[in-house]
Image (cartoon, rainbow over all chains, first blue to last red; front, side, top):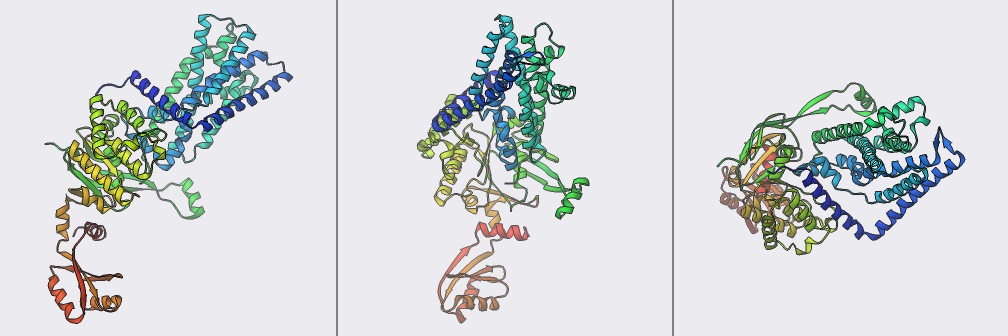
Length: 267
Length: 333
């Protein structure tokens, strides 16, 4: 049998994606309503952010536009987890009901097959909004535009996304061992809301937690330092791509380990 | 020819928590967990040739699903050996998946939102089916069932029957060596059942695919299986062809009678006269299950004719259903 490499998976993913979007578009009302809903969610998030920063011109040496930058950065970084890995939310239901077994019979990677099934198009609104915020704050801060800085942005956005995806994978995979993993998944999702703040505003205890235990500081803070404060980048920022890849790999192994020991329900 | 499925002395044990009763018991369970080992499958061996249709039967909880899961690579046997086309399914799960097709009666494996034809195209890519093979398979499907109305319908809008049909077609699409069908006709109406049986039989003949069929519907067994395997409580009870099975109980015939007067009362008095046979009655017929080793049907009939006015009679061979029921209840004596 031919080996199935990256090209194979990308092609399959592309096709599933195209089909999925096509079928979602056919439910027009649903599509429009959920898009509007997503826009309002983002606008209300932004308004509360804006109100907060009208009262405080800066927090711990972070100005308004820098905070806005962090906010936009986290929105963009959270798009992949929203769009591509949304099926993690259904995992516990699938496992509990026994439907998960149907994913076990295909000659392709189980993790890939499972995640490819759902593409959450609503995340695209978030992406547009995040990009807008990012570009706006970028010009206001006057960061300039060089190929190097663009490269940095791309690398560190991927880093940030991987961290969030890894956290969600690990949280979702707990359902292979415990009955109701919803709370864990929910907890992780709630924590990501803190990702848009500079970690220095928290107390040392939380700084430690957000860096090493629940590494949300890697979603926006550490990576964006590379662009925002190029003169004083901590070592953790430079290491963050490696940490992210390692963390993602671990979460994937954890997920697969759970899936392989899964044995379904009676039928 | 070597066997496509080779199962040797396979046992599967599960560790299950001994749950204590009541709330106090549950709290105790939290602290001291008391496990017991349950043997779901106990020392099973069989070998199945390419192209066979095997009915895999047993009451609920007999260990059928566990065996299927081991053959498909989802579960690892506790001991023993399973080879599917020469592969160990559990350690080569993806390679095994390429060689098999699986259908679970009520769990569709197709993409819920997609029309069937798009699901087929995705499967074509996933299983790396060549264009030629794909086209000829679709051609074959067209000749066997009326798939045109199904092709452009999203799976979620299909009826259960259409969905099962689609699932079966999808399972055969990559021309696997073995297809596992787990209760494919469950919940379907009579005509859909017949359609699905014809389809399975035709695909088996055309492609020489081995089919492992678990079912509780003896109609499926009669229509499809040359060979049946029966397990109960994890142990293999029977593995042979279906004719042989009937031979076990071949000496049994059901004599059905219609008698003037009150049928229920007559049935009771007949039972008294013939204590060695079981007698039952419904609104139309009185049935006497006659063991021909003990008495000839004709003698029984003669005996009854002297004391009752028989209006009508029928003689029935024992059905597969009754045979299986007897095996579940009494075992193969």
